[in-house]
Structure formats: structure tokens, C-alpha cells
Image 1 (cartoon, rainbow over the protein chains, first blue to last red):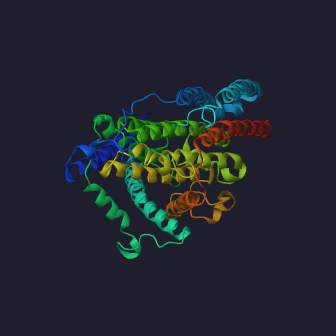
Image 2 (tube, rainbow over the protein chains, first blue to last red):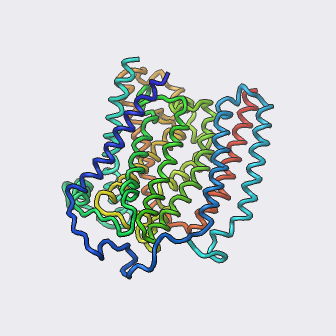
Image 3 (tube, rainbow over the protein chains, first blue to last red):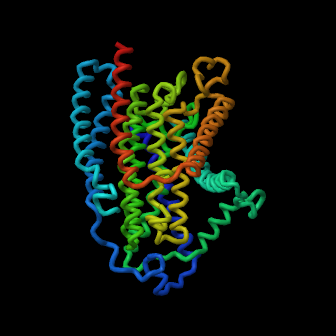
Length: 125
Length: 336
């Protein structure tokens, strides 16, 4: 039953191995002569000002949260898209209601969020 | 079940070899095409016509010093470049290259594909955060937001393809296009998927992840040596993978256009001639889509970040949902 997944495990093994080999090659063959200016984070030639782990715009969190909602919507759609012919029009209208509610939610969030990434209102990120 | 398993490992070896080589070839082609579009010469010194240029680049990268910035998180900084490479290599598992020529035919192939491609986000987000550089952090955040946003229209466009195939297996999706390609019956879905594929690969016009003028190198500013090389390799492998997916979902995979109508004059299934024809057709279409990727990069200027977000959320996603609903309704009417 699961034999079609077997090649995938082999492929995972191969690709992880390849990634490690690529990483090791340059670590083994490259020179290692660190000095302070080389290890500083690059800020276009100036001495770095403060730490990089600062606060950043909340818009990125909002994008990630909305992504989860709509990605779940798409995952729920797939099983119906496979079997919709047998399920008939009753289920079709049910799915339409589901999609309509979520699309209304999408337009609501767009109305609320649309200004966050624009330059005029918020600090550009 | 012995024979298919053995042959699937042979195909796996071939597919991995082709994918890893193709990254080098695409780098060379990109530089030559860019030079042609901009009326330059391009790389022509190393080997005949500069064909050995990618090899020279790799050798140079290998012998460079591997630097992790001070206060950066060394473990995460090292792990980050592996993610894009591994996910790019894993995607080939479910792509059918010809009639019966696939590594594995999962009945949840589309879900596997979406799961694997969305893992790529971790690589860029980790790279941006672990470098402890402001450019890297902003680049990583932008990349994560962009890749998440464009996954939604991409998923919806794939769902509209699934409606025609009524299966999540990639082989069934390709075979449902034997008469009419997805491009002809579902043109809007094809356009949305292509735009989303450009954004997922972080390619121009959506390459503001690494917008040089504002972010230096984006999330890979602090990467050197082969760690940078792996991001570079992964970017070009994602271009090839994106082209393969466009081919599979909307350009009929390994089928010639309208192949179902003249199938009797084509070689029979299971013969060597058919296998070679299938692979040639598939690679031809993939090569054309790779060329389109390069062509667009050197033609269309870069978007701004707010334009990118509003295109993804307020145009492509509602359009993709509408496209899905309309196609579902029409197919319901036809079949009832």
C-alpha cells in the first residue's frame, strides 16, 4: 500500500546527503582567515548601528495569519474538486456558501489591511 | 511490483542528474540571453562559446572562504541554504516525464507538491534571521511574505486544474489534457499559475527579495562561498521546476497538442520511440518556459513591495477563486 512512497524516502535521503556534501566541500577546501571587519554584518561600508534583531512591521504577521486561513480554505477545496461530479448540485451550493463567506472575509481584511504596506501611511518596510 | 520500483530508481537518477545539470545550463543561457537582449556579448571566454563558465563559477565558489557574521546564529545560518536545495530536488518525485516515466505516482501528488514547495519559505526566513544583518532580515521577511501570498493563487489555480482531472495524481492530471491542454480550457488559471510561479521562484518582476538598490543581496547578503552557491543553485533549480510545473499542469505535460485526435499515428505506448518522444516533448516545453522566465526578467521592471502585495491579495486571489467557481459551475452543468 505504501510502496509508492518508498522512492520518496530514498529521494529525501539523496537530497539531504547532496546538501550536506555541498556544504562540506567549501568548508573543507576554502581558506579560513577570519578577522573583525570581515565578520561584521555588511551595512554598505559603515560600522553597523545596533543589532539587527529589532522590531519589524506587524503587516508581516498579518500576512502570515491570513495565509493560514486561506491556505486551509484551499486544502478543504481539494477533496471536493476531486469528487464534485458524484456529489451533485446540493454539495456544490454548500461549497459556494463556504467560498462566499471566506471571500467576504478576504475583502474585509483587504479593506482593513490595504494601507499597511503603502508608503504614504506606514513606515516603509 | 518489482519492475516498476527498479525503473523508478533509474528515472530518479536521470531526473536528479538532469535537474542539477540544468541549473548550470540555465545560468549560462540566462547570461547569454541577457547579453543578447541588452546588446552585449556575455560570457565567451571559458571554453567554446563560454560554455564552461558555470563550471568555472562553481570551482571559484568552492575555494572561497565560508564566513558566518559575528553574533549570527551559526547553526541556523548553516542549515538555511539546505532547505531550498532539498525542496527543489524533492519536487521531481511526482512530475511525470513521459508515459509511465515517473519516479512515483502518488494519489496525493498535488498535495505532496504543495507541501514540499511551501517548505522553501523556511530557508529564506531562517537565512534572513540568522545573519544578524538588517538587509538580510528585511530581505528574508519580504521573501517569506511574498512566497506565502503567492502560494494561495497558485493553490487555487491548481484546484481549477484538478476539476478537469478529478484526481490529485499528477499522471491523471497530465492524461486529462491529452485532447485539450489546460491552457486552452482554463486560460485564466494558466496565467495566474504562471504569475504565481514567477513570484514563488523570486524571479523578476517579483525579485524585490534581492533588490540590489535597496537591500544589497536580500536574505543572502551575508552568505559567501558554497553556501551562497547553494542559494544560487536553488534559485535556478526553482526556475526549472516552475517551468516543469507549468508544463505539467497547463501545457499538457508530455503530450503533443491535441495528441488524442491523432494518437494512432504516434508510436505505441511502452516502446522506446514513445518514451523518447515523450521526454523530448516534455523537455522542449520546459525549455521554452525557462526561456520565457529569462525573457520576462530582462523585459519587465521590478514591482514595488506594496504593488506586489496588492497584486497577490486583491487581484490574483479573488480572480483565482472566481475562475475556480465558474469552471466548477460549467463542468457541473455539462455533466448533469
